[in-house]
Amino acid sequence: MKQLILLIALIVLIGCSKDTDRIQITNLSFNFEHTVGGEQLVMHPWGMCSQPAGEDCEPGHACCGEDLNYVNLAGDQYNIQTLLYVISDIYLHSADGGMQLLKKAHFVDGENPATLRFPAGELDNGSYSKISFTMGLSADRNIPGDYPDFPDGFSWPADPLGDPALTAYHYMQLEGAYDTITKMYNTHTGPLTGMDMSFNKEFDISLNVNDDLGDVAVFVNMELNNWYQNPNNISFHDYPNTMFNVDAQHELKLNGETDVFTVTTTNR
Amino acid sequence: MNKVSYTLCFFIFFFSCKKDLPIIEGCTDKNALNYNSSATYDDGSCNHDTLIPYENTPYTILIPEGFPDMDIPDNNPMTVEGVELGKKLFHDPILSRDGSQSCASCHLQASSFSDPNRFSTGIDGVQGSRNASAIINLGWMNSFNWDGSASTLEEQGFEPVINPIEMNNTWHNVENTLNADATYKELFRKAFNIQKIDSTHVVMAIAQFERTLISANSRYDKYLRQELQLTPSELNGFVIFNTETGDCFHCHGPHKFMDNSFHNNALDIEPFLDIGLAKVTGVHSDNGKFKTPTLRNIEFSAPYMHDGRFATLEEVVEHYNSGGHFSSTVDPLMKKLGVGLQLTNQQKQDLITFLKALSDTEFINNPDFTP
Image (cartoon, rainbow over all chains, first blue to last red; front, side, top):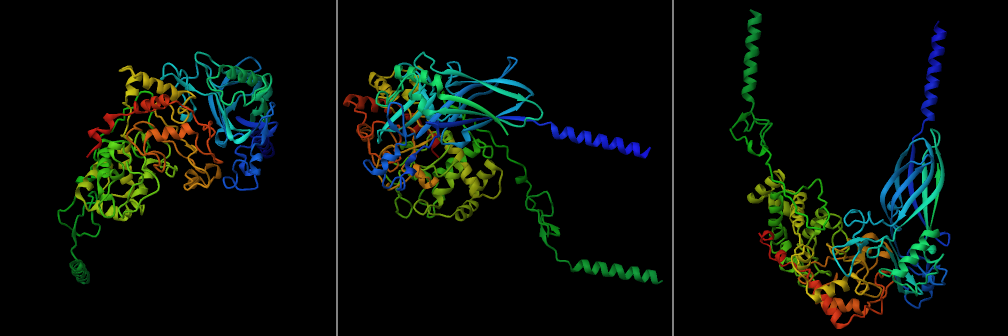
């Protein structure tokens, strides 16, 4: 009889222990990465010179040529000193057609690591097939004052020639120098008066969440050179500043829709 | 017989011992503020009044249209008594070592609480190297001083009192002076329910007062509220301001007319005399960056820039119109570097006219801000 009781206790103990080990919560994190020509973005490239930044790096100095560390399809040498943008309506789609909002809007500052990731909550078991998001803010999302966490400098005069109270938000501020470090470009995107220039992107993923999977990370990569190519070959000489420039905004939108973004998923 | 003798001896011994105890007069009520645990005789001095918390009155900040909510620290809620105390402290030279200077000595209300002098002069006649910033709408700022060396208003308040070139005092002295002042003792009791004044509560009170220094009633604000029409020159200036013609809006955005950020706006070539933000962060790419000031009341807060180098708005506009100087950390938003905005004289004048439409005369004359 004693042996029987011991045996049952052992079975219960081992059984319980196994179950506890096996069930895992799957947390989803959303991450942002940036590349130029496939290489990880290096901002403020002054440190690439042999001289300390700000001491010998003056126009005409040999080291300054190295400060323009990128080249786009148009052949413009350039660097990147500012990268700010917003991604909104970030959804995870289930294979059965359901979708869940991961975040209404997320602001990314390429220089601030805290903005390059956000926790997107726990995932239920099931199959997930798609990630979708909007580059920028759709017209119904681009409401003044709705995003107090966005920096003040990210505001966009929605109607600069008309109602001054009509302010919205930029979609992106991508800035730096081209040709020489004394020539600045400002690739700014945002809504044109009465025109929503944001665009949606969808990416297929294959994610089967079960008790054994563990945490999952989604990586959104922005290939910055692709803002200036495919299908529109954009030179900084044509558009050193893009704000309020209708043609530039349309071309950038088309390029952005084509292949600026890629999405990958990993689990630990 | 023995038992009786022993008992008698014990009582004699007990009472004789008790007689030897010294009589210490004082308050023997443990609930009183001045309870004396050593006292053996209650002399009627117990003070119970101060144990009853003073019910101070919450101060409600009226948020101007278009402004976000003000982020007020949980540990320093606004009260009517706190604001009044902060105002008194702000204007009282008691904080300086020789009692000659107050906060208001270098932050004049008529100048939008800035210093009309290029550099302020401390109690010992020593001048600093930066212009005293305007104290206006600080409740919406997330860093303070030209180099962002303070991250809260409370933190900022600690510095001028002990700065050798400003008030040149010690907080120990300030605390002693204030604690010896019955009026301040009472005001602090009412504001914070404290008996002993300390430096923390001094800066808390001043911060509360500073959060009330809100300016949002300029001609521009009235125009937004459709209470008046801007002149053609002001409107033209606004368009220059708010488009890439002048490109002021990126750093001096709507409503607050500042961006809570730091920029190198091409004032100087390297090496910089003052490295600004980099002094705080230690980061090379922050060299020469300074906090964007609000343009509200800019007409009243001359001179301009971190070092007060420009005496007039005309000089400021001319700086941007000429394009400024290259340096390795110059902001990409200074996109017409070396070339300049190339505004016409009329455009420059219109831009300045618009900037003056940001003047709030009610603010600089508001009696609520004076003692």
